[in-house]
Length: 253
Image 1 (cartoon, one colour):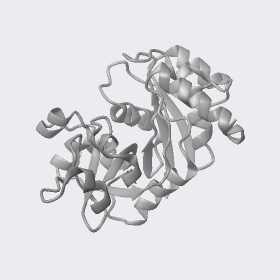
Image 2: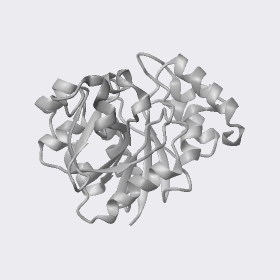
Image 3: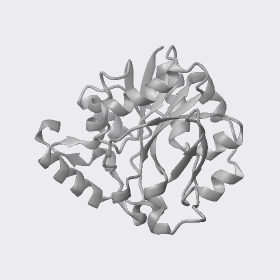
Image 4: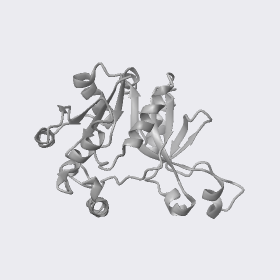
């Protein structure tokens, strides 16, 4: 089975414009993401709608595909890039362009989900730890996931799921394993084509979580587990944290 990683990267961002080109340890963020992925998957390319990002990727020797400015999601951008540059690959891995510390183990975990021939879509979760505290569990920017015994997602929510009716909230993390969603997705190529043709769904609109569109339309999402915590770059403050992390781990430079 052959895997291609596609990294959607937009220049425009409400909270941090031009973040793919922001410098982190002397390299653009998008280059760090690319280098973390290269060598783990069979191929990798950046999908962008901006010539500045295109030139930056070409400057460090990466592969890049220009895509439409009209896409509403990274999934849609991935599919266009796959049609232009990825045909012949069985699985498309959608890698966030603001995750410069994505780890090999995370990519291997999502790849392993496709050892099951029935897997249509795969993603990752990280267990919350009791020491994370209730505030981390309650954070609406950290979607929670509940799974069945086959490690398929039953639901994703910004709310805390499940709700432990008979326990005090301070004891919830000690008495149940809650899963934090990690925004790394992989799709069989045929499934990616199908899901990009779906209209937005009521649950997706309610939670503002695209993956609910897939569940609501009957697709299954296989869930792999990772113990790795990465630093996503959503704001200039995140970039400062990432720079500090890099200084503490010179081997990552």
